[in-house]
Image (cartoon, rainbow, N blue to C red):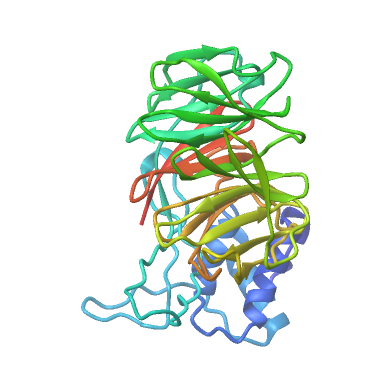
Length: 362
C-alpha cells in the first residue's frame, strides 16, 4: 500500500469515517461517503479507503462500480460527490431507517436537501445575524440591530421596519402570527408585534430576554427563556412544566400533530414533547464536534434543525429519529445561525454575516 500523508486530512472527518466503518451497518457505501466527506483529495482516495479498511477490518473497494441497468442493491445508499453549489446537485449522507413505531400513518421520508439558490442580504452584513422568519414562497423577515427587514429570494430588501427594539439590541428570533403579522423577540426583554402593514406594538414586556418563539394559537405564544418554556399572551406569562430536563432552551417549534420540539443548546440535544409536554423522544447525535442546536423549524410533520458547531442542517421525525444530515460548508463558509420554512415548502438558512441559502427537501 502506498504511503498516505494523513496530515492533509481533517482528522475529525477521518475518525468519523473510521467509526462508520467499524459500525455494524453494512448498508453504508464507504466509497461514496469518503468522496462526499473528503472532496478534492482524489489522488489519495484509494489509499485512504485501504487504510480505513485495514483499521476497521472491513473490506473497501478501490473503485465504485455502477449497478447494471435495471438492478439495484437495496442495502446501498449511494452518495453523489458534491458538485458546485450552484449546480443544484443533491448531496446526501447515509440516512437511518425511519422509526416504524407510531399510529401506522405514512411517514414522510426526507432524504436530504438540494440547494436552490444562495444570496447575501443587501446592506451592512455585520448586523445580519438576527432572526429569520419565512412568510411566503419567496419572502422572509430577517432581523438585525434594532430593525427587521423583508427580503426576497434574490436578496433584495423589500421593506424595513425600525423601532422594533433598541438599536444596540438584536432582533434575535422572529415567529409567524396571523394575517401576515410576525412576533419579534429582542434582548431588551420584550416581544414586539409587527403587523402586515409594518405597524409596531409591544405584545408583552418580560422579566427575561426571550429567544425562540412560536405561535400556539391566536394571541398565544410558546417562548423560550432563561428557565425553560413559557406561555405568553398579551395579558401575562406562565411557565410551562416540562417532562424532561432542559438546560438552555433557545428555540421551539410545533408540528401539525401538536408535537413540540425544543432546542437545548448547552444540553446538546433536541427534546420532543407531546401536546401535554410529556417527553416522547430525544435527538442527541455524536458528531465530530459537540452537537449544538441553535434553531429549528417544522416542515409540517418532521423537524429541521440548525447545528452551528458541525455546520449541518439535520432533519428528524416526530420521535427524534434522524432522517438526514446536510453539511452546509460547501454552500457557505460561515456558520449557520437560523433555519425556517413553511410546511411543505423550501428551507431557508441564515448564516452569520447575512448570507442566505434556500434549499428544496428531497
